[in-house]
Image (tube, rainbow, N blue to C red; front, top):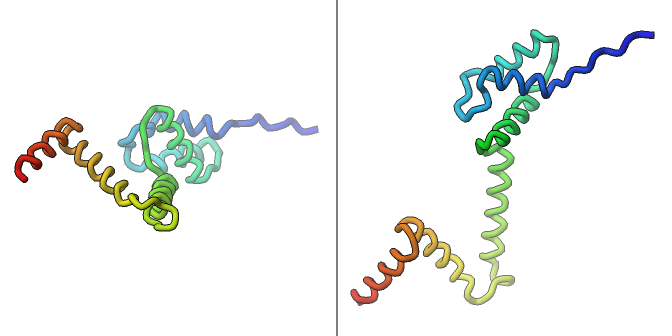
Length: 130
């Protein structure tokens, strides 16, 4: 009976290599994927590029570094489109649906001006001007 091969956890090996070359940072070294693949091939392990990218993304998340993936950007765009369609459709929105846009504009203005106090001051000045 043949002996069973010692199992190697490829994910752990990839994580170790990523840590060693400093790829767990937003500004990873140039050509980090090729470096990881070369080190894996030297150890006799074959791994796909998506697996390397996925593990790096997970390690970045653990480190608290936010990296938007293509899927994440698509999800965010789809969600924004769904919300805009829900707000914009006249069948499901109340008569004052246009007020939502105005409220979001005021919120954006408040952020730009530095708070609601500044918006209140601007409104008071506008009232005085007529």
